[in-house]
Amino acid sequence: MITLRTMTDGLPHPKAQRNIIHHNLGATFASFEWCGELHVNGSRLGVVFRPTDLEDNRFSVVVWNWMTGETVLVRLLHQNTSTPIDAAYPHNP
Image 1: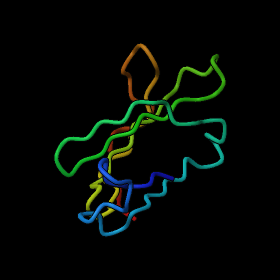
Image 2: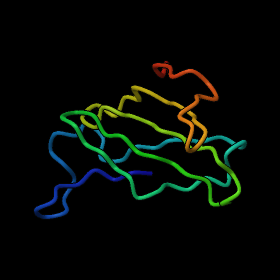
Image 3: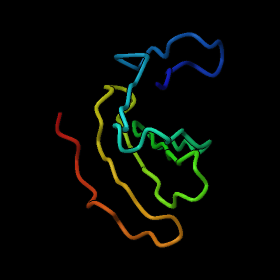
């Protein structure tokens, strides 16, 4: 869960239609937790999810439109190779 708040006063961000974004990594990746890599570029918010198991070399990158809450991209990769396990795909709910 990602909560969208203003940096000035911590209140829900007025440009966000929903102030909470949820993402389910699924049972396959139950050991994942988010790593401190958040990237914002205009209306896009990207987050890197990494496994808690250090032996697991997969990671997931998810991009949302933070203003609408729409998931724009989900990609699962192998660490240090940038080889996709699955192809990047626009998320269609």
